[in-house]
Length: 328
Picture 1 (tube, helix red, strand yellow):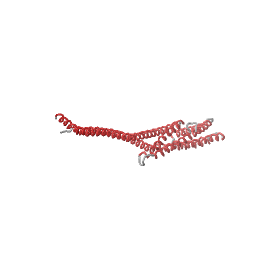
Picture 2 (cartoon, one colour; picture 1 turned 135 degrees about the vertical axis):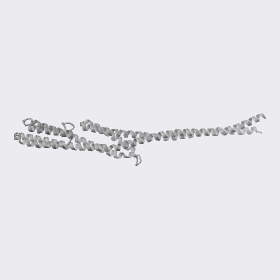
Picture 3 (cartoon, helix red, strand yellow; picture 1 turned 90 degrees about the vertical axis):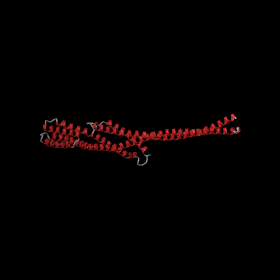
Picture 4 (spheres, helix red, strand yellow; picture 1 turned 30 degrees about the vertical axis):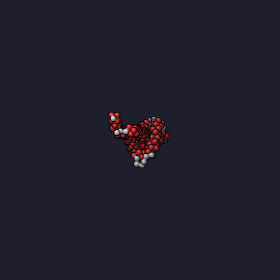
């Protein structure tokens, strides 16, 4: 027969044990979920830092690529128009490119050896060489003259005008015709830069000197015209030599510009790949965190059901015992 005092001793123990277990289960769930969230937040923060660094690196790399391309376009425009403003503009754009490269180096220096981004060292030397080549172009072009009144071009223009004005004082069709032929060779060389026009100019000079001797002009007139033609010849030769050197420098400049493109393209590709991987890693980490929290919640729910079921089974026989006791 069920003893009432026994019932009093057992039921409170079972009910208190159930409450404690439920409380412990709740605390365990909170602690476990909090730990998962805390670990996830730390990992997410780390992934975000990596992502931000990749974004920042990519922006600097793309900025460097855009600045380098723009600098090449400005240099081409300068060689076509010889505008002083283009020199200052080119310097500003190139300084911006070097600033981007400096920021890239600061980041890359922290990377391990063998990383694809480590190749920017060659790019720095390439950019410095490019800068030097452009400075050489500017120096030579200034020597030639940024316009027809400056440099060797201005001196050539002055010398030929002096010779033409003096020759115009005399009626010498042969000398005038040879002078026109020299002017044509001079302009063809200025336009095309082909040294064959310089050779033609030299031949016309020799022919002019021979024609001047038999022109019938006075000795003073011949000496003055000869002196003016000598100045014209020397001015043209200086211009021709400098222009030929400038043409060679332009070819070297174009080669240096193109030589840097593969390294820059590789750097852009490496930065894009790093950005893509960091974004994929951050997305994957967020998915893992969601699934981990969902799994932990589901597991805690199963534990709650597991711990609750035995107690429910204990309560039912006890209720039946109560019923029997009441019948008796």
